[in-house]
Length: 400
Image 1 (cartoon, rainbow, N blue to C red):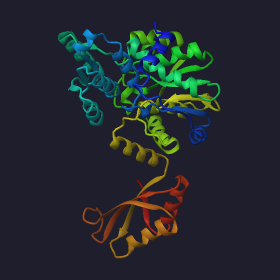
Image 2 (image 1 turned 180 degrees about the vertical axis):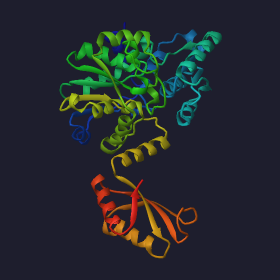
Image 3 (image 1 turned 90 degrees about the vertical axis):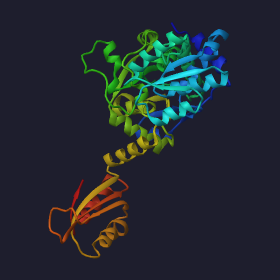
Image 4 (image 1 turned 120 degrees about the vertical axis):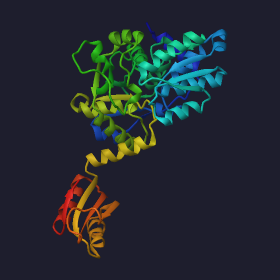
């Protein structure tokens, strides 16, 4: 089983090869979630994820013969980039197998580090089987994304840095869980150095693989999730052993909470996070009473989110919170009404008009009528309602 000595050895081995990322307190975020929050900014690694630590440690331990044979791995993106970067630094030939539907941004960033990319399989499981077969056929060293003691030790080095840098005692370490490599390293480090700190893993409801390990009667895992980095159907063998021994609990969070956590991280911590990197904050949002007023640390474990997904996530959260308001007007088709409506929204009510759609030809009522759709940015849900109430005094308008 993984030991604290393995993690200390990994820390020495990868020193200077990966970034010693900041550990910061975030008062704005702490106030918002009613907890004392400390962030480990693993999103600032060269490849934008903690995965670089495990990859750097594993590749540094290869023999000369293994380096000549080359390496192969399977990943939805972050581990892939870590392996690709450190293989390039060490002059090792690398093949990365990625599921077919891996976000294009992650595929491109991985390819930019010089590795050969193969898109294979509908999901991580199918891609893994293909990678296993290719490794056996070509004699390459398979670098497992999580179920490898060297990889787990590398991930645990981030916990060492948290314990060195975080102010005061920590009640909880919240850790995203996919296959279990990160939480294994954190749990072993905590057991040795901070045994009073509870280690809580966090998974998406869509991939609550821990429930399967506990024989809970839940629906079959799978489906669309913004936390694709933790979309793993089964914990690893080595990671399961560590989790059973050292992890206090693993909880699941819904998609909406993950989306909200991405937005909160951007607004309050001024940091970009991918879905999996927002899992820990999503847990605080989902179980506020459990974590109220507690001292909590967690890694923003990755920042490799597609820009379109990020933009859509931010807008979806604003819509849910009422800070974006979509209105449909049914108005007579005559000059001046659009200007009047704009004046009410912008000048009288201090709303910000983002988008306007004015439709005359395809309305179902009279040719003398028009349908107007407007998207408005407001300060709050209350402000949105005030704008709507004011407009309804003069126009036929509905919220959409």
